[in-house]
Each structure stands twice: as C-alpha cells, then as structure tokens.
Length: 450
Figure 1 (cartoon, rainbow, N blue to C red):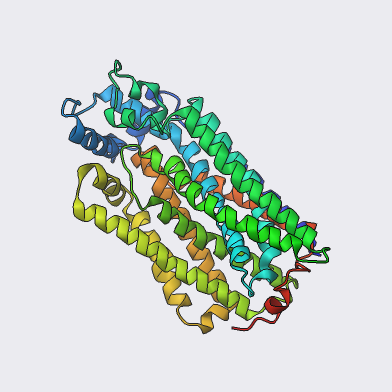
Figure 2: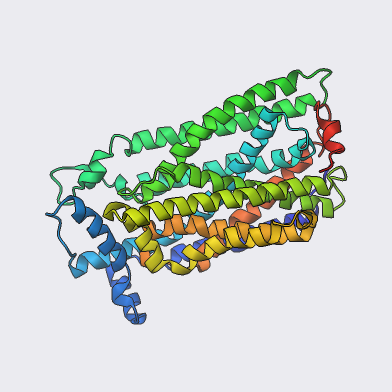
C-alpha cells in the first residue's frame, strides 16, 4: 500500500496557499472603473492606446464582412469600456486556463484507461491503479469548471462568453449580432448548462463505476467485474468521442463565437491524450523513485513514451492542418482567429509548436531514450508546459485580448490547481493496493518486455 508522506502533503498545501494568494491578488489588482483603466493606460504609455484595439479591429472586420452597416470604429468611451472588460476578465481567464488544462489531463487519463480495458491490452494493467488515482481529480476539477461556467458567465461576473449577452440576440438592440443570433439555438444559457451537466455526469459516472468494479475485482473469484468494466469502457468511449467534441465547441470555441473549425474536437482530443499519458508516465516514475511499483519496468515506461511521441506528432499534424487550410483560404471570418494570435501572441503561438513537437521528437525519437527516466521526465515537463501555453493561446485572445500577460494571476492559478492535484491524486493512491490482483492480463503485464 502506498503511504502519503507528510513532506508531500506539506508540499501540496504550500502550493495551494501560495496559489490562492496569487489568485486573490489578481482579483484585487483588477481595475473597477474606466477612470482606473485610463490611469493604468497613462502609466504604461508606450502602447497604451493600442491595448485592446487590435482585437476590436479584427472583430469589426469579421462583423463588417457580414453586415456593412456596422460602425467601423468605436468612440473612445466604448474603447475604454472594452479594455475594462478585458482587464476584469484576466483573473477569471487565468483560472479558466489552468482549470481546463488540468481537466484535459484527467479526462485524457480516464480515456486512456478506458481504451486499455476496451482493447484488453496486456501490457498496461500494472499501471491501472496509477490511472485510477489520477482520475480521482475528475470530480473536483469538473466541479470547479461547472462553477466557473455557471457563476462567472451566467451571473455576469465576467465577459468571457460574450454570446451570453442578451442584447446580442435582441433585434431591437443596437448591439444586435446577426451571426450570434443565428447560433442562439445552440449557444443559449439553459441549453449550455444542461449540456455541461450531461457531459460531466457521464464522465464522472464512468469513473466511479469503473473504479468500483476494479476494487471489487481484487477479491473476485471469476472475471465478472473485469467483463463489466470491458463493456462499460466500450460504451464510455462512444459517449466520450461525441461529448468531447461538443465540450470543445462549448467551452473553448464559443469564446470566439464568430469563428469555428471542423477540426477543433480532434485538436483538443490530441492535446488531451498527450497530456494525460505524459502525467501517467510522470506519476509512475515518481512512485518508482519512492520504491513503489517494483513490477513496472523500463518497457512500460518505453511504451508510455511511445504514446507521448506519437500523440505529439498527431497534435502537430492537426495544428498544421487547421492553421494551413484556414490561412490559405484567407476567408476573413475564419482567418481572423489566427491573425489575432500571430500578431499579438506570436511568441506563445509559435513557441508552443516547438515545445509540443520539435522537443519531443528530438528527445524521444530514439528508442533507447524512451527507457531513460530522466529523459522522459524532462520531455514530459516541456510537453505539459507547451500544452498549457496551447490552452492559454486558445482562451486568452478571446477573453483578455492584448491586455494579456503571464503574471501573478496565471501563475497563482496554476500553482493552486497543481497543489490540489498532488494532494488529491496521491491521497487517492493510498486507498487501494497499487497492483490490481485479479485482472486476467496481470501476469502478462508483469512479465511484459518490449
């Protein structure tokens, strides 16, 4: 049985406390009026007048391509109001980015776990309890996401989901937006929340039932519980592939409600899988360094690293396909998404490609390197950092615009959720033996050699 040490528990608590201070600081330093915005812009005079304007201009180009009667420029007061909303969005967006990042990690692990059961893989059962421990974070991270979605969006605590503004779908309002109004059958608050609850309920129900069956299987005299998990996992994967795509449209793509991509669900899926598998590898290596998981050998680490390598290439393929096709077509309402990111987020936008593709390929292409733990750890840290930036680039341009910066709110949110992740996951690992006992493939998994 795994035992959570007091040092690790203290480590997690310190991260949570420091992170919480950073989050609170982010909210306290947010301007509350246009007057404060003007003072802040005057203090940072270099590019003060341009803050927030690039996104406004891009937005107007999109609207203008559909409705020539839209005004071409906002007056100064409207501009400052827009910048105020962006700055007020920043601490919320920082939490949202970090929360969604940990969410895709945990859901990626759960999906990988289901794939192992449904495919009846013989190499991976020795890692099942690690995966189950990581997925213990799912109820908490989805609850945080739902609260953010519910409180911050529906109750007008921020302006991240701009389509929630009722004036945009009111034909009598001067802010009426024809494009958003046409999408209101899908993008409306009640249906949005119902879908969110449906996704989360399904994911958490599978996690609960599969974990329960896995524990019961330890003391079973037959393969009844394994067969139940096999059928349950096959059904979950069908549910997942549909809801994952819908979730990506709702929770990320709708932040830019004028824009859409038919590749978006697959793009989120690729990032989700590589992050989840990377965390499985990192947690496994940490436990082995502490003297646990003696039945996990270099071949198991090698296979995890192969998946990290493969899904990194798959992610890059989807990133390039989406970017290249939209850029080449140069349709205004599509290309505006990348214009904003290339012009105002050039370093993180292209830097994440290096971190998520070039670095993993160079370090993990050689088969021998996949067996070296510190190589896998180094590559894993870079991959996770790269995909955090990927989520950052997906969320921040639409919510914060050119007022962005990776500072105290962003770091604080990441630290808090990381500390909570460590505490929850490693506590969950203490609840059951680290080796499943009655799995029909456990002997094959222990003796696995690549």
